[in-house]
Figure: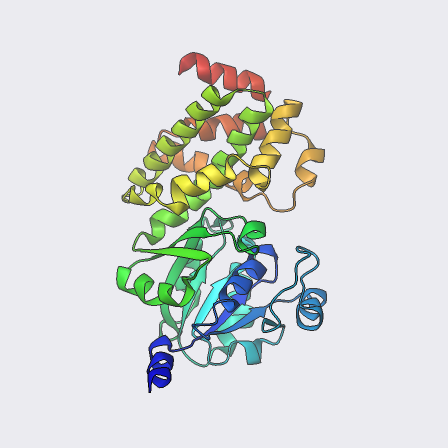
Length: 342
């Protein structure tokens, strides 16, 4: 009787992680290790080589050398994958969210699901938050709720069982509380939140400000000055949220200061690494940018600057980045001018 009661309490779910990249693989592996919940975990992708590697060799050699769980299954068949799915985690680049929904997911859903966005950035074509894109394209009858999972997390550490904190945000706290219990485990430490839009905005500006933290380090400024810019980055997060009529409580969470510390101080961060190379060279070079495949922070600079001008938001650090990346001014000169006026 005890075993039967335990199974009923756990109530296993079918969870699909969309995207066989580094982060999608790390999330799926972390979820499938949680044997107590007994959830069915499926990785969905379009790269046949990665899918075969996962299924046949229990590895995703493009990103990791370690062995994955033999229970982890990857698929490129949308009909089978999205049949009777309960929770969908979107771990694809922001530019692929809409395509994934329209071409692979929505046509093959057989019941309503929860949609969790793991991507950072905008729908850059329409300047729209990704959570709103999901709400727009997923029919109401197939949408149990849209959520955002964000936090201080490097995929390479998560997959190696390093305890990692996340915020799971929705519009309503009851939705995030309902879903988080299926994801929270020994490695993924999840905090439910009702600050969906705030977490989305923080994820966007955080990546951009991480570029600046890298530039400051590359210019050989010491910890005092780097701390100054870190503090001002938090201030600009607050300014942005205030302009959108949102609470700043999400700043003091794994998705805010936690993720800002992570991505703004480590060479494992693409944004920080790119900024560091630019600061070191004291200029933006094509060679530096070509070394990094996905740099969401750079794509957001122009959009955030336009928003700051239109709505009179104090985002001086974004102006610095615009001068460096778009006006091609020397980083050292721009930073010196800012510090003189500080």
